[in-house]
Image 1: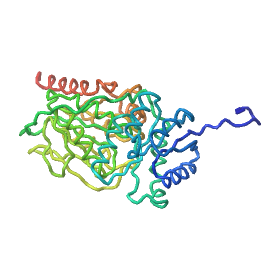
Image 2 (image 1 turned 120 degrees about the vertical axis):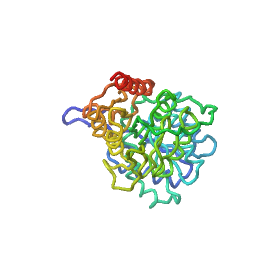
Image 3 (image 1 turned 90 degrees about the horizontal axis):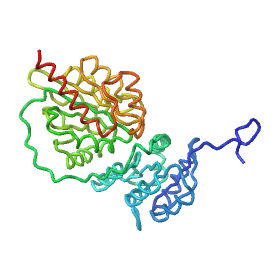
Image 4 (image 1 turned 30 degrees about the vertical axis):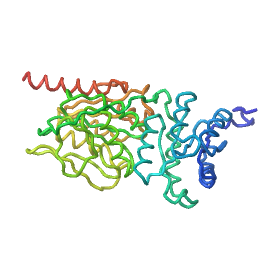
Length: 367
């Protein structure tokens, strides 16, 4: 019997993990890697979704690592069942070599997976060991996930009208920071923007190269605004959302001819590239009172200093509330560092940004 009393047995506080993969080698290596992390313990493995569901009911693990492509019952179907019937933190193990696999990974994140780890193309022991740090990071996020903040996303891509490119230069901007849980949050926020916004939307989602183009395409399918992965030197237009490419910093450079996207490969900030702080500071400098910064779910503090810069320039600040954040780290840090004009649940973030920009326009027109 466990006890915390002096001299008695110590209660095991490690998070329990179930490893699911159709490859016996990967199951073994991943389990061994996780077994080396002090705060986690592997309680079982499964070779497909059917066996995984049985193991989840039998073992009740805190966290599941789940392969996407499996026989019998694949990762997406398994994830859908888990999140609707027996919710818990899920980390996807994803091959990222094909566009189809990227799309499946993004769909998994929309369905409620906390994070994903890219499996190397050649998934041998040494290759898996190279992603051990990334797996550790994902498991740490899963250990603190707010499961109530990740309800099942049922929104389907809409039949989208072709959006005619706006010839105007953007005179207002909304900058968004997101990390762990971000794809799910962005799939709620970006489609809620209407053309009433009349501002550019600039998004930093912490994500590796190869995934942000797919993220932009999925958001574009869902949204009234045009959404695309940002390109270096392109003009910033209103009612268009630009997703920073994975692995590259994105800022805006504004002059008399309007604002343009600038991408670079400078060192990571807060350990990430792209970094929201760099984007937010550039938006503060370029758009001033006509800027709104939004900090969504994620671990760490990226976006905090940048949100403070936007507020100091006269712009607005929105922070996602704790109840709807998958991980409250970034919103909490932003609130402590910069404060906020609105602390909003995910469903009201887009409306809050539209209202703040409209209020700034009303003040300017009254002068």
